[in-house]
Length: 274
Image 1 (cartoon, rainbow, N blue to C red):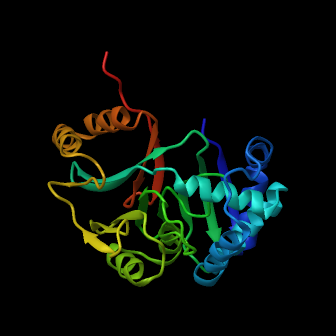
Image 2 (cartoon, rainbow, N blue to C red; image 1 turned 60 degrees about the vertical axis):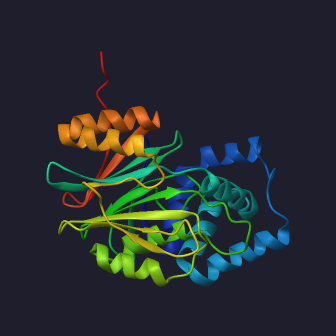
C-alpha cells in the first residue's frame, strides 16, 4: 500500500505537511545512513544555494520537509541527493488513442496531493525526501514524468526539479517544453510530457544540449535498447494490458500512470502470465 500525503499552502507549508507525513521514513534515513557519502560542505552549500537561486519555492519546501520530519537539513539534503542520483525510469506511450506517461516506483514512493497557493493542484508520485515528482498530473491536464539520473559533480541544481515547476505552472506540452529548454539545470534527466489536448513530447536534458524528442510509432522510450523499444511497441499494438505487463516485466517494480485527460495518476498492477 502506497501512503498518501496531502500538502497545502505556501512552499514551506507544503514541505511541513510532507515532512510530518514521512517523518518515520526520513528519521530512519538519519539513523541508517547519516551523512555517509555526502559531499564536502563547500560543494554541498553551493549546490543548495543554486537551488535557492533558481528554484526558491523548492528550496523553501525542502526546508519545510526537514522541519516537519524533525531532521537536520544536512541529513535531508544528503538523502535528497542520493535519490536524485538513483536511476528513474519512465516512458510515454500513445495507447488505444490516449497519450499517457508511465514510471517505475521505488519501494518508498508516496502519493502526494498538493494544493500550492496560486498554482495548479497536482497529483504526484514522489519520494519522501524529494520536492520534484517522479510522475504526476495537474488539474489543468498536464502530465510529467522524469527519467535518468543526476550524475553531475558540479554545483548546479538538477534539471529534474523543473518537473515540479511545470506541474504547478502549465496547462500544455508546448509551454512546459519552452520553459524547460531555457531554464537552468544540470544535465542528467529527461522530462516527458503529455496533455489533455493530445500533445506528447519530451525534453532530453541528459546531455549538454536540451533536445526535443517526439514519439516514434507511439512511444518515447529514452535510454532503452532497440530490443526493448521493439517489445514495448509490440505490446502497444496489443493494447493497454499488454503494455502494462511488458513494463512490469521490464522494471520489476510497481508502476504508475499519469493520465492527462483524467487529470490524475493511478497505480498499475500488471497482469502476470500464468
